[in-house]
Amino acid sequence: MLTRLPNRRAFERDARRSLEQALEEAGRVTLAVIDLSGFKAVNDRMGHSAGDHALQRISHVLASSCPKAYRVGGDEFLLLLEMDTARAIEVSEYIVERIRALEFDKGLRILANIGLAEFPLEAHSLDALQTLADHRMYTAKRLNRPMLRPDELENLPTPQRRESDRAKSAELPKPNPPKKPKKPKKLDKLKKPKKG
Image (cartoon, rainbow, N blue to C red; front, side, top):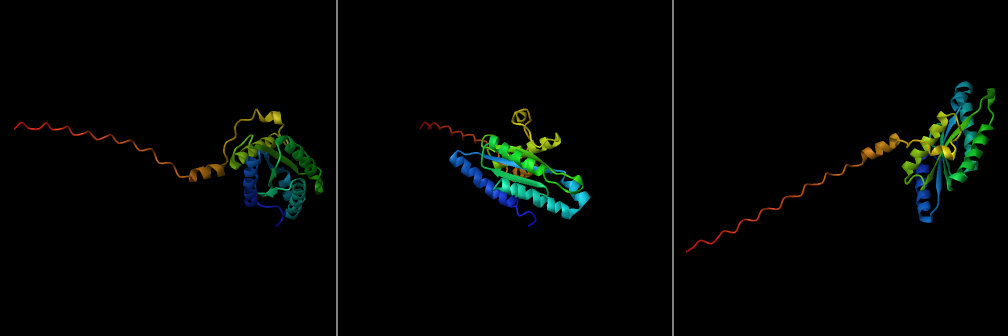
């Protein structure tokens, strides 16, 4: 295993447990979605072995900053932070600075873009939590920022569901249309008895 971090399957298992525990104990869980800017330049200019070494160094930063860190793609990571957003921002800022401080040959640097979403305050399911954190991370990345400030989050449009969520919804069986109630049968008119 390149980074020694658990994969997406482990994340989904642990996340469901953490969310269930948060509901039972009135706790908070904040999901951090992390994407790396500048990683492709390291791979392209220094080679894949240098890129692998960079991932290992960044994974060490994440694992030493959060006990529940996961690598779910080439340069995509998730953190399960069992705390509210305010404390998660502090952890995330610390991670951003540690990754920014890493030095690579040829003056290259890698920056982290992070999106945060809190359960159950902002989302009531794991899919919704990931969708919201993804949206915030990509917005920060588009603005060339490590993270968005809490006051900026209020002005963001509602994120669309991820493609994987749409696929899951499409797989669900469609409910049968309600049957029209049958009209009651008319009672046969009583025949008058014939006069004898």
